View 1 (cartoon, rainbow, N blue to C red):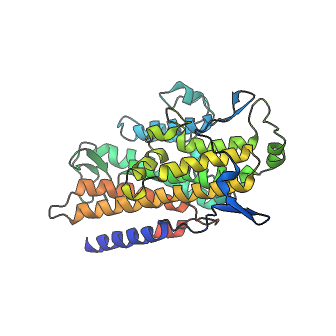
View 2: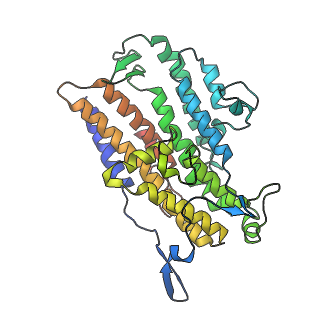
View 3: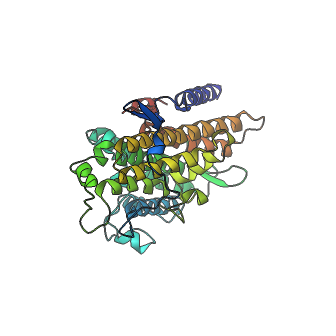
Amino acid sequence: MKKNLLLLSSIASLLFISCSSDDDGLELSECVDGDCDPIESRIDNPDSYTFTRDNESTVSFGGQTTRLKMGDEILSAFTDVTSTSEQILSMYAHEEGANDFEDADLNASDKSVRSKTAASADFFATNATDQAVIRADFDGWISAQVDEVFPNWEVAAAAGTAGQIADGSSTRYINAQGLEYNQAFNKGLIGALTIDQVVNNYLSTAVLDEGDNVADNDANVVVEGEVYTNMEHKWDEAYGYVYGLNADAANPNDDLGADSFLNKYIGRVEGDDDFAGIADEIFQAFKLGRAAIVAKQYDVRDAQAEIIREKLSEVIGIRAVYYLQQGKNSLDQEAPDHGGAFHDLSEGYGFVYSLQFTRKTNSSEPYFTKEEVDAF
C-alpha cells in the first residue's frame, strides 16, 4: 500500500509540473512593419458565438452534438445490468439505422463514437497501430463491465473480487482490482474523443487549410447546399465537441456541465479558485478564432487555436492531479475510505489515460506519450 501511495504522489507531482501553465510561447501581440498591436485589437471579438451570412447562421456542429448524446447513453448503459456487451458495443460503434439508442434521432444517424475515437489528423492519420490499440481499450472496458462486474452487481467487493462498494454517498461498482470501468471509459473518452478531435484535428492546419479551404474562405465560397465555408465549419466542429449540448451554445458558460465529458470538467476547473477564469479564456479564444476566419486573418486564428490547445490540455492535467490526490487522501485517513478512494482513482485513471491526447503549446507533441501513459 505504501508503495502504491508513493507512486500516486510521484505521478501527481509529475503531472502538476508538466501540465501547469507557464504562459510560454503564446504571442499576445502581432508586429507588422514595426507597428505592434495586441492581436485581439485587429478583429472585433463578438459578445457571443454568433456568426451569420445573408442573415442566416453559419454555425453548425450537429454531428458533435449527436456524438455527445450517444456518449451519454453509452454511459447510462454501463450501469444497466440488463445490457449485454453486444448491445453496448453496438452503441459505441453505431451504424445508421440500428436500434441502439433510446433517442430515435441517434438511431437514424450515420455517426458513431468509435469512429472518432483516436481519429485525429495530427496524431492518428498515419498511426493506425495505436489507434487500433486505443479503440480496443474502450471495447475491452465495455466487455469487462458486463463480464466481470454485472454478474457481481449485488456482491460486496473485496480484494480480488468484483462487486459493489459504498463511498459514503453512493454505491460504486468495481472490478477485482478496484477500477470502475465506467469511469475509465468516461474520462478516457474525454481525451480520446473530445480533446483529440478538438486540439489535434479540427483546430489543426492540416484540417482547417486542407485542399482549397483557404482560397474558398478568402473568396467566401460556401459548401454546396450550405451557408458556411468549409473552414468555418471545421472550426465550428471543434467548438461543438466542447459546447454541443449547452442550452445556449452561443453563450455556453451560463450552464457549464451540460454533458458528461469535456464541458463538465471545464466547469469543475473553473470552480477552483486557483483556475477561475479558464472557462472564459477558452470561450474568448473560440470566438476570436472564428471571427478571424471570417476576417481572413489566419495568424490570429492560429494564435487562438494555440490558446485553446493549452487551456484544454490544462483541464485534463488539473483533473488528473485532483483525482489522484483525492484518492490518496482517502487512503491516508486513519479509517481509509476505500469506496471513495477507488472512485477518485478510477476517475484519475481515465484522466491520466487522456493525457496522451493533450498537446504542448506550439508543438506537435502531447504532454505525455502513449508509452509514458501506459507506464503510469
